[in-house]
Structures are given as C-alpha cells and as structure tokens.
Image 1 (cartoon, rainbow, N blue to C red):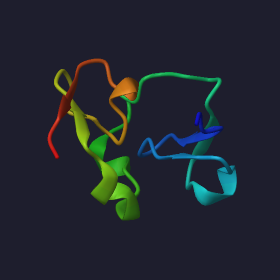
Image 2 (tube, helix red, strand yellow; image 1 turned 60 degrees about the vertical axis):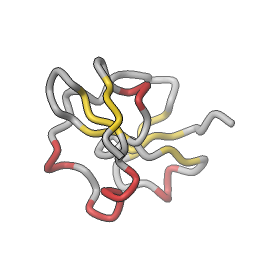
Image 3 (cartoon, one colour; image 1 turned 45 degrees about the horizontal axis):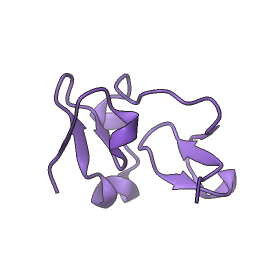
Length: 72
C-alpha cells in the first residue's frame, strides 16, 4: 500500500500526517540525500536500514536515496 505521507526527517511513511514529526505528502517525491543524519527522528532510528553510499544519509526505504546500501 502506498502511504500518503513521509517524514522529511527520517523517511518513515504513514497514512496520516499526524503520526509523523515532519510530514510531507508523497506526491512531492524526492530523495532524502539532503537530510543530515542528526535530523533523524530519535524514536525512528531503529527502522533506518539504508544509507546513501554517496553522502551517508539514512532512510527506512532505499527508494529515497541516490545510492542506497543496506546496513541492517
């Protein structure tokens, strides 16, 4: 199922924007490679499974990174 919102800080997806700390509608798709690691929501660190091999940014979903590598 395609989620309607994604957290701009950590890449977590949800159907409701109220469950995310910094939501953006998914139709505004983009890469998270400009999000610094320090901005990842603290309670979402456990689900981060991918890093960008080019810049080191983290995401829960490899689709949001330019050069994803899985580390968990």
